[in-house]
Length: 319
Image (cartoon, rainbow, N blue to C red; front, side, top):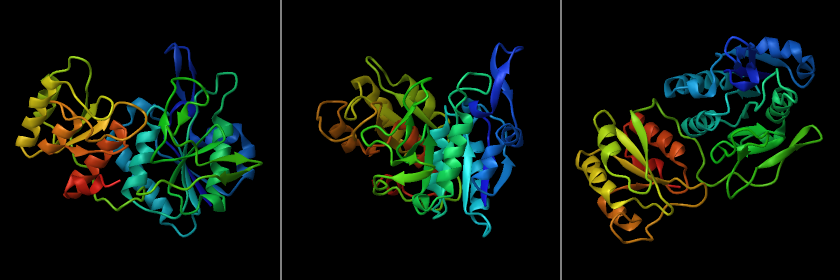
């Protein structure tokens, strides 16, 4: 049994003349009725979680989705779960699920870049590929996966790297785990080290992301500190910030609130390479937590998980 959890997104959308663009949504059973061949791939159960465009997903909704998936995975009659999701926030939900509990049963996220009103609607093909992967032995004990365009990605390192191309998803510097070939999943590389999920009771926060850019000051850091319980700084390059941001970071740390440093670039780790004011080494000396190779949106989720668990955030940033 494969449970299909439909959350909305482009895969469920069609053209809405009143809105002047993509909008009106199909329910999960509507899609199965339009593409009955999907029922031949596995025994399927439909769970219509919602009809949310990607940008409408919140961390509260993501946590509720995580709990829904966990409930299905714990059922003895369920072999795997496929989640359809809006691509704009798919990587964040997949990462949250991957990092917040462990399961040997396949959990596969998928979506679409084109609506059912467009020529070349990729939804049925992506959904079919995701079902095949979730039902295959190759996906067992591989954590959360993302299947788009017949490519299989790890939920802990995939990102949306293009605004509208069908092959919009990538794992920068790593490539896909594998592919869907001749109707089955074929994995070609191992899961990244340190990607295992850990049980987490809740999400803490609020946690904002503040980007570094040429001439940036502490203004946004100070504004976020009013209600924030932690902050992620999306630094430049190796993990460096303009000098005027440093006093704002110091004020966060002075209040005992964690500051996590990530990079706004797509590849590589933050590090202690530069010793100038605002450089990574100086930030480390202030007590900033380094986010390794995590992108800012990933670091935010790990920080929220740490705050929700009431543990030292550094324990969530070991890899």
